[in-house]
Amino acid sequence: LGCAIPAMVIFKGKRLKPELNDNLPAGTLVAKSAKGYMTNELFKDFLNHLAKYKSPGRCLLIFDGAACHLDLSIVDVGDSLDLDL
Image (cartoon, rainbow, N blue to C red; front, side, top):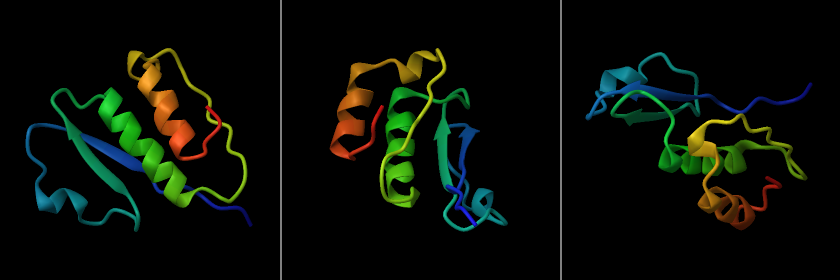
């Protein structure tokens, strides 16, 4: 039965057009960045999104070596949301 976390979609640009949300599954987190890549701030937004939709209990989140995942402030956000990072 399980559950799934709604996706996060990052668009390249300076402004989000409302039509970009059309036809996306319910709960999808839509964001933008200058280059269309994950940033530290967007990753913190994703952690909040994850905390909102995850099942109760512990959660294992596996990081890759992306620079936006390696900031100490990420751990602070995870701790405040009761995520085990």
